[in-house]
Amino acid sequence: MIVTKLDRLGRDAQDVLSTMKNLAERKIKVFVIQLGQLDLTSPAGKLMLTMLSAVAAMERDLLIERTQAGLARAKSQGKTLGRPLKTTEQQRSQIIEMRKSGQSVSALSRTFNISRASIMRITGAL
Image (cartoon, rainbow, N blue to C red; front, side, top):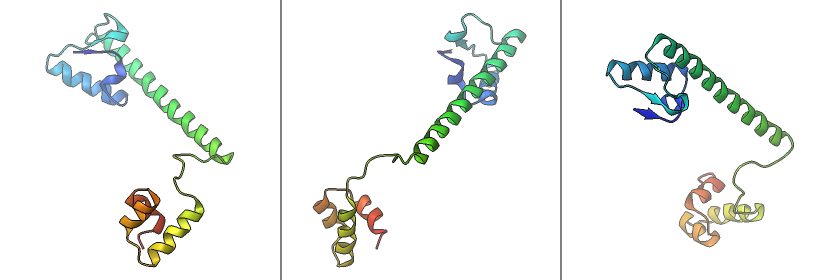
């Protein structure tokens, strides 16, 4: 079995190690291009495998941490995250009133050129 990087074998260090153990039990040799000719079944290879898996897990955790910090900073600065709304506040009020007066979700969807799910979300499923 050939993989480009060690982190392709699992989500975290434990997952990578258990995957490697399962493959070894089935007599499947794993070749990691990133590591070159390192024999992952030898004691030194197992040590490298464990260390590199732990480092990859740490890098993944740091990436998540930095992303969350960036999102929190953007929110604190008043930035709106996510996809821009297709309707204005006035249109949303209009949709709610029209729905209360008996307009169907499908008709409102066609009128405002938005999905039925958006109408349901705006009206709170009146």
